[in-house]
Length: 251
Image 1 (spheres, rainbow, N blue to C red):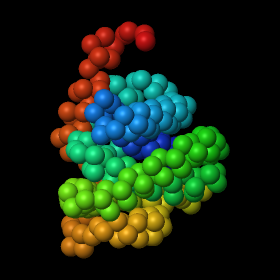
Image 2: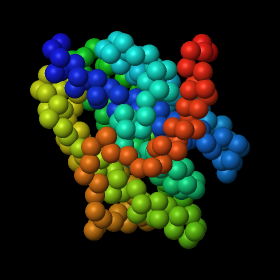
Image 3: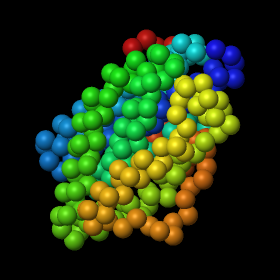
């Protein structure tokens, strides 16, 4: 693997891992606060799945750059993270959390299906192990969007407000860099832009069936994954503080 391809793959792997890591942290913030005990347990398990996926993906990163998963998670600043913005936003209410989960689960389902045939076999192998959990994640969030959208006026209103806020940010999932073209040519990673139509074919009918209206005149976020909100700084301060108190400690 030449350096250009290696660097492009490294950037994409870090982006995948950061998406999982940051969403895991946000979902874990619901522990003890979910609206139902059953959902408290379900979302905690879901957050644990995401953290596990992040750890495995960062293990692939380590094979390429020599940095351990702990170094990548706890000793990078916000500017070095490559997650998409809407995953770093505060957890908000239950409608916000479930809609965010649904929009991202639908994206990951498409991405993982395509990565099963990646020419980079280590990535194809780990994705095959993730898929069963991701199928459950999508079913869970799909159910909650329907339940809230077809529930009360208040639950629908909260869900619509969440969609109005998040929809423009989802465009960041499908931004493509020059390096991405190289990965696609080599069969390593699908072009994100090529997944946008398939993603919309999944989410748009479901949103409409749940009485939701996609903002038609929203200004979509056309920015790379290096662009973040101030919320990521706050999240990392919380997530990293114990490790940074004693960087030499072994856990």
